[in-house]
Amino acid sequence: MPGRRVEQERAFLRFRSGNTNDAAEWMLGSEEQLQDRQMLDLLEALVEGAIRSGDSELAQSCLALWCDRTGTESAGRCSGAMADQARLTAWLGDLAWSMPDVAIGLFRRALELEPRNESARLKLAVLLLQYEAAEAWEPLDYLHSRIPHSPEILFQQAACARELGNRDEAIRILDRLLQYRPDDVRVLLKRARLHLDVGDPEGAEPLLRRAPRDSAVLPGLPVPCNYWGGKRKQSNIGERHRHKCSRRIGGHSAVRPGDGTYSLVADFSRCGLGRFSSSVSCGFGI
Image (cartoon, rainbow, N blue to C red):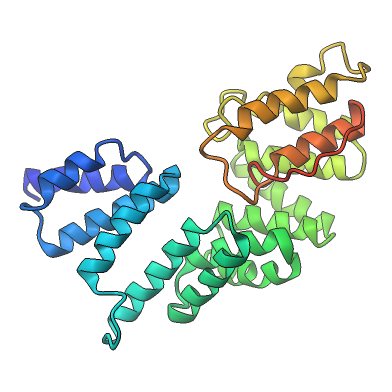
């Protein structure tokens, strides 16, 4: 490719990853230079990156421009526009993630429009997992049949198996993941959670100790074992740990509704470090 085109593709990849710092600069400098398809690629990359980074204002602005250029909202479109309508509906589901009922309806509609949208199907399953675990298993099983070695799909299947009371299946899946990803902090914490489910903090301890303390997945999250030391019998240590995690996790932009680090901390404390309850259930799918 010409050098300029390579630069564009690199920028689009960067935007899709969530790094949209120079988005405005690119938009202003590219209007005259990009062809229609390239401009759509840019807008799509910015929408997805803004959603990933939690910048809903940028996502909505770029989405409005994308809709205007594609005419997605106009009636009587040809069959080729069905995919655009499905993509728009899925993006709206992403933006409505904090309103699960709305987001679930949007992802269902996106799949009606485009059944091959595997990303929308996975997001639907993740949301259903919070409310109707039995219903979440079907889309996860379908995705597993299509992409049998996907770590994310396997991880969500393990979470679903646990919610359905199939502890042995959840353990089997997580142990399989740990064979290939021994330092995956989400898998380690989920596996530790299965020990806590049956009141076994001693079984959870070695798994928690293995969780990388500098993990990019959980930046700033102290591993619970860091607080054990010789103070295991202090009645207030669980509460101290919960507050510390709450401060660090609660303000982190990467936290999405529907995950469960807080509940892990609550269960950890309930099992071994004093008793308290927590109604909060958000974090990283634990």
